[in-house]
Amino acid sequence: MSEVMYVTSETLEQLRSELQKMKAIDRPAASRAIAEAREKGDLKENAEYDAAKEAQGLLEAKIAKLEGDLANARIIDVDRIDTSKVSILTKVTLTNLNTKKTVTYQIVSEKEANLKEGKISVASPIGKGILGKQVGEIAEVKAPAGILRFKIEEIAL
Image (tube, rainbow, N blue to C red; front, side, top):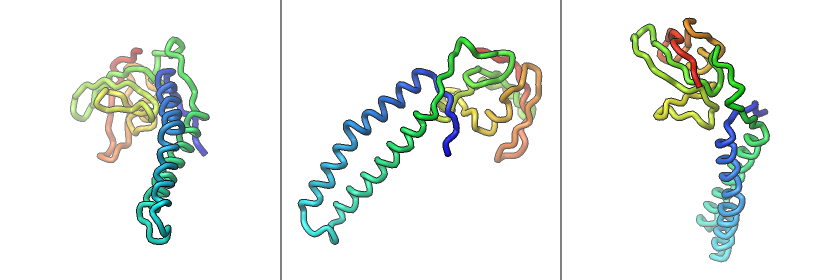
């Protein structure tokens, strides 16, 4: 069902603390909200009860997804990353051959992706297109805007 998710040890800890918060704080709060709504009368016409039950269902789905993600998480050791080719956690400087603009991205897991910080997902079109490439190679990336061509200028940590 789920595929392996590569993360840093810091991200793994964030995911674990998020799951702990959901189980220790959010789940009991959802149960209290249902109990309070149940006390307000007829359940057939109680919109507050329905909303509380729906919120609890959404929370349980999030908990199940996060537990699945954690079960499939693999920690990446930064010291063992090969910078001779583009791989997860490497910083890659690319030149867009269409626009001649140069950008630097760090290739990260889906959970860590944040374009404002220059972190793109390994599963994104650009991430998939440049994965495994070496300095000097041209990567052709299928993107919603069409085919983009990037030259790999530099690979670092």
